[in-house]
Image 1 (cartoon, rainbow, N blue to C red):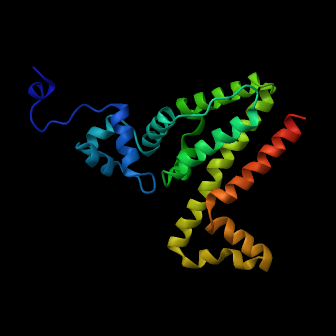
Image 2 (image 1 turned 90 degrees about the vertical axis):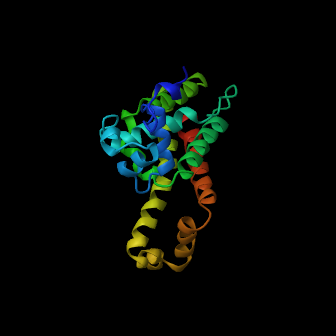
Length: 211
């Protein structure tokens, strides 16, 4: 007897972390609501709340799923700079591909096992490449924060501008030359600006921690 025959018609499949996480990711993080996730899973909200306690746990499940299913770069010998740059871009692209995630993910942070396992693994790779443990922890913390915070700032600005269009003109209070540069930083190609920030960060790591 197959699964369809055993289960009454119309009864939803049992919820698993993977199914719930996939539904959360499909709903998106910008305005994440349990009722929308429940609808995508074809269950009522009460059923969903027997599996997750609330918004933070939904984000936690989704972050775990995204981290676990992403292909992360591997360290090639002692080429730590190329490795750290690649890891950071992988995270940046992952977060950017899911609007709202940059704002939502700090709510889970160090409580997320998959995220902490990723952080630990990158640190251990840097230690293997010659970094002191504290320096490895600092370097990884620095670039991963940089990736998330750069996108979070854009999400915050977009949210504020939606409520008050005048926010779009924030840069006009600056010196004219600086205003144009900062306008481009927030409204131009996000990858170009972040790439420059990451280059400065990696130069700093190389100069201060690897001298």
